[in-house]
Image 1 (cartoon, helix red, strand yellow):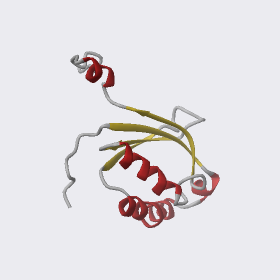
Image 2 (tube, helix red, strand yellow):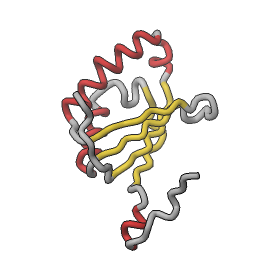
Image 3 (cartoon, one colour):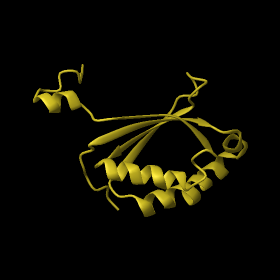
Image 4 (cartoon, helix red, strand yellow):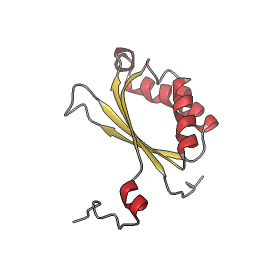
Length: 121
């Protein structure tokens, strides 16, 4: 099914640390657990969210991974968090270290400016 395009109004950086339980699973079991225990709840309970995943354990001992969640609106993001909390993802497979939620170029939108702080070289 093709991804339905949308403009994210909320972006959340979810900083997590893997738990000993998660690390004790084989790679195959981790993939299976995510696909069968976590992903179904996300798809069942949410609409209008997408994510990107970044490994950071190479550079940080406090945070092993960063999930970037984009949502159409605040309700979609809130439903995502509620869905994740109903799965072993939250506080069993991962410790949620920090949630940083923001609006891309919010200052520019609020003041009617071009997004001058977003740079491409």
